[in-house]
Length: 93
Length: 216
Ligand code: SF4
Ligand code: SF4
Image 1 (cartoon, helix red, strand yellow):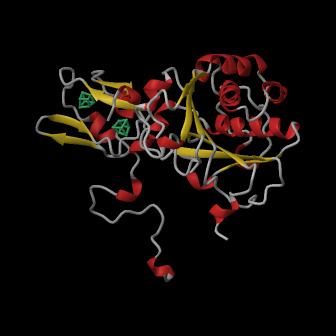
Image 2: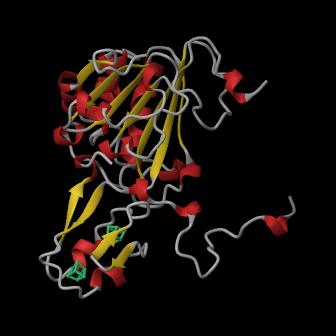
Image 3: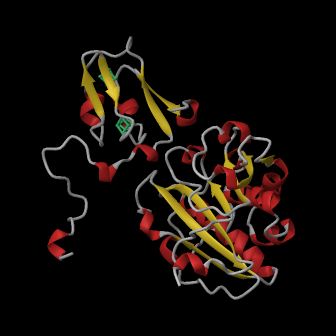
């Protein structure tokens, strides 16, 4: 292998939605859980997530748990307290 | 000779502690340092170190600290990772999910987890070579003593905060109870908070792998 084939650290070809080399879901100790009744769709959590793993869908926001590292920023910034951090082992999946 | 052959050294015991990056680095390191220093008091040959490959400066990233204990001089002392651990300890319960904590374990290995949950509950999440486990042990080490969050002692620097002052003491106590790798008396000579380490030893819940339906 020549040095030209060695990937430059920490870079992701753009545009790209996901990077298999940077799966951070197993960093998570607490899982964000959304209360849809409280959510006003302001999207502050969406723009604040450092892993860009909050997906907008027609049924509301969804956390991509393959990448969510459980940092808790989304719950912290939510003005409506719609997100709760729940211990990860409360879930079997 | 491959590196895995090196670990056929008779009498060599490997202990691997998994932790969450940055905020549990010290506690993981303290568990291996406390247990190996206690073994050194008993005249054993020992080694303890942290795995730098694990990106230790990312908060929450799974990181490892290692210890080796042997009654013979350790021939594999330059092998950087514990490839076939006999003891696996977790500073935090969610490491059982999505992290290959049982990778390479030897038959008769013991898993010790810092959690309020029971060994039964923890064993439901285990994947990999569960049939090689001898026992699953849980202890609420964080409930006994809060973790110390410090960069003191990181990357080989002098540790001014002392060994075993946080939940590593009770977690090491649980390791000692479950494995008998050293005597409790030796461990208590090393750790800073002796009452907490003793409480960990007393409160550890040891469940036989067969009773959990894990043994093959
Ligand atoms: S916990 Fe952190 S990583 Fe996960 S969705 Fe919220 S902000 Fe993103
Ligand atoms: S910040 Fe809170 S209210 Fe706003 S979209 Fe996110 S969950 Fe909904």
